[in-house]
Length: 177
Ligand SMILES: CCCCCCCCCCCC(=O)SCCNC(=O)CCNC(=O)[C@H](O)C(C)(C)COP(=O)(O)OP(=O)(O)OC[C@H]1O[C@@H](n2cnc3c(N)ncnc32)[C@H](O)[C@@H]1OP(=O)(O)O
Image (cartoon, rainbow, N blue to C red; front, side, top):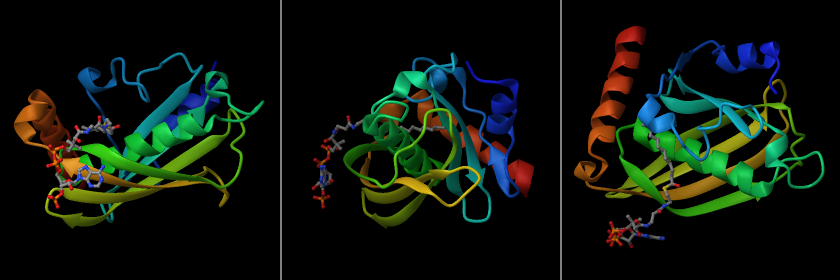
């Protein structure tokens, strides 16, 4: 479903980005990242090293259709949710989403190469506010913007996921320090 060029594009970090190699336990059956068929969502996650925010490359496949030929708003909101949650995890906050706002700005053509940017905007106790943007990969068109409130949980509730996350992010630090 994806061309070889699309796969190559998805897997190639931009300057200042480090690839996040997420373990099978996170990817398997993930609503957003768990589809390897290319029919629905194809994503690769990265860390933007200068400010440790999150980047993702994403292609919305034919199975994400809402308006004919364009992505469903729910699929865009799901990608923003996942990326914003990932941005919080990347900065050491084991969270789940409590509130999510999405603003749909421009219809997103299926198959377009897109980039997601997500960053933590404020932390107040257990409340972690995160913002995000879904834009054209090779241009400035913004398809959707998001804001969300995430709540930090007891890391014990995430069990092995929390230690996996620490391991993944410390490996990145070793690679870029
Ligand atoms: C490599 C690894 C990568 C891993 C990358 C993984 C990325 C995954 C990202 C996916 C993100 C998701 O979709 S997660 C799935 C969707 N979300 C969920 O299913 C969450 C369901 N909701 C819950 O489980 C719960 O409501 C919680 C945990 C959010 C909160 O419950 P709690 O723990 O009992 O906390 P509680 O005392 O109620 O609230 C704590 C504080 O937060 C505030 N608060 C709580 N909810 C709200 C709310 N909706 N709006 C405003 N404020 C709220 C409270 O007022 C309080 O403030 P104060 O009194 O302290 O001031």
